Structures are given as C-alpha cells and as structure tokens.
Image 1 (tube, rainbow, N blue to C red):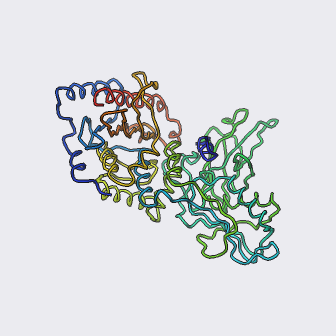
Image 2 (tube, one colour):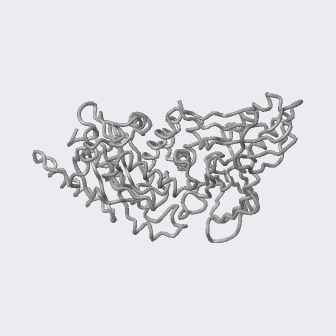
Length: 487
C-alpha cells in the first residue's frame, strides 16, 4: 500500500571490532587470489576508461561479514558523497533516537477551556516532524472543532524551537529549488509552497497554495509576481514576514505548477493551520512565532510514523529536509556545520570511519568520504544494533545489465544513490541467494566541472544529464561484474 506521506514525497521533489577495521586497511589494490582478482581489476579499469567521465572515479568492494578487501580503485580518495551521506545519517538517527522514536505535533492550550473558548494562548507546537503535511493540519483543525473549541482569548503561537531555524541547507544552490528548503522544529510539506499559474487573457492568474490530498488552502505569506525580463527565472526577497517571489513571464508557457522553498516554515505552518481552522468555524489570530513553549494542556496531536518507516521514505525519495531533521535531532547541535561535525565524530568513534560531513543530506558540496571509509562503516554497522534496521530501510536497487537497463537476477542489491551536479555515488550491499554478501561504495566526481558552474546553472547544467547517465551506467556495470566474480 502507498501511504499519503509517500505520495507527497514522490510528488516533489558501536565501534567496529579490530578485526573488521583492520581488514579494510589493506592495500587499495586487491591481492591476487588464484589469478581472478588481478584479471578483474584490469576489467574495472577498462570500464572506467570507457565511461569517459573525467574527474575522479573511486570504488571499494569488501566481504560484508569479514571486511576483507576484494577489489578497489582509488579507494582512499575523499570524494563528495552526495545523498549517500543519508546512509550514515540513518545509522546516526537509529542509534541516537531509536527505532521507536516518533515525531509529534501538538495543539496546546496555555489556559483553561471555558465554554469552548481557550482562556489564554493557543500553541501549534512542533517537534521537528519532517513529514507533517497539510492534511495532518486539517485533521488537527477537525479534532479541535470536534472537541468543541470555538475561539481563543489570547494569541495564536507557533513553536518551532525544537530544532534551530536554518534558512537553507546549502548556500550554493539556486534559491528557487525545492530540495533546498529552510529547517525548523515546525515544518510543513517539506517546507515548500506550491506555485501554480494559468494563462488569463493577456496575462497570468497565479496562486500560492499548500496543497495536500484533501485540502488546498491558499497561502498569503508567500507571494508571486510575474515580470517581464530575460532572466533570472526567479527572484526572492524576505519582506516583513512575507516571502516575495518574482518569475520571468517568458518562462511560464500556457500553465503549470512547481514547488518552491519556504524560508519561514513555522509562520507558513501557522497560516495554513489558521486557514484550516477557519473552515471549521474556529477563528484564530494571526500566528506569532514563539520559539519553544512548555506546559499547557494538549487539545489535539498528530503522531508521526515510527523512525524506520520515515527513514525508508527518506532513502527512497532522498528528501533532504528529512535527513537534516534526523541529524539535528540526533546531535542537538545549533547549526548544520556543528551537527555534521558531530555526526563525523560519531562515525569515527563508532566505526573508525574517517569522513567530513558538513550536513546530513549530502547537499553541501564540502562533505568528503573515501570509498573505503563508507565500506568500513557498512561492514562495521552489521556488528551493531543499527545494522539490522539499516538493511530494512535501504532501497532495493535491482541489478543492471551492460546497457544500464534493469535485468532479472537472483542477486539482490540494496543501497542508496547520490547525485549532485557532476557527482554520482552508489553504496550498499550485494546480497546473493547464497554465498558471500558484499559491501561496496562507488563515487564518481568531476569537481572541477562542478565548481565552474554559476549558482543559476546548478538546477540544470549543460551536459549534466549525459554525464550522470554515463556515471550510473558505469556503476551498474561494476556491480553486475562483482556479482558475477565474487559471489
């Protein structure tokens, strides 16, 4: 069954034992075993050369149980992990938060309810739920109405202080891309607002809304203006609590819609909740940010799914907001850089993994992981309580043939892909029906080509799709080859 949360996501966008740790510190070139590995290594070099990617390609393959190195090329070179960093984030969250962890969003009265009226302030309080959506807020509003709440004498507060407010995940991304939203302890619709436009005579009718499956409330705090200009496509400016956008008229065509990031998610959630409550006959004042609020009486709440379910969707749809919320919740740090550093330290202490994480989603281009270090973590994790849950949340990637197309195979491949401009990664486990299970990491990166891009070019860079297709084909060829040689 496909849950409502997964549909929304799809629309957008312990220390390792010495034996395991030392097993991955052998020479980055595999030893010769009956002449098989030496021949295989040459074939890998030929595949890499044929891919013609430019930049750097590194990989590592090891026995998932013993950590014995089977094959490697440039395995110690640190490269951008992109979204494969979410694998480490998943392990971090599983250990620090626990599999039973659930995010809860509450409506709290800071005074008694008398005659259906809250005598004091009403609070919409978040705990960081990255999957809270408009339909959840609609259900909260309906629950208040069913409980007989009709008004408040005080303020309507939005409390997003459970996590630090962070304006965007990565400063080098275009400001209009929905995968780079703000972060807070009160999030909604992955902190994105829907922009819709239609031709209307000689101009355009536009609206900003927070659509769910059952509710489509209009949004006032995010505003759009169509302007005549060649470029840029969008501009953004925060103005007195509002978020003002402009869009180039020539890019709109007949009509369409897209998700744009929200920079003030707590106020966004508050406005949407206010609108949904009004539809239930409950009039609330304008929302006011309150940081954190303690005490009070819980009138209604939405409880998120268990952590493994949330992680499974995060890895399936690669939702950056979910990853950052997980990491910040696990670390308790006040910013992404400090939180990424805390996860780096944890990975070193827990697995002996030497890596640099500047965030938890992999969107920050300064993160670096060597293939051997990612494999070290994948092997070592199996000796910890997080290892089993991790394998249940990793995605079944399937096997691919020489042409890059999926093929039927008894060998299962579970893992995570990662993509930035001219960066592509693939990490995970190769699981045959019997025989040796393997852990692997493959990173391809042309950082020189990536760094040459302007900020505006980073949504759809020239040559990016072709490069990515080549990288993914190479990764599929390597995995296919390993399944044939080492199982």
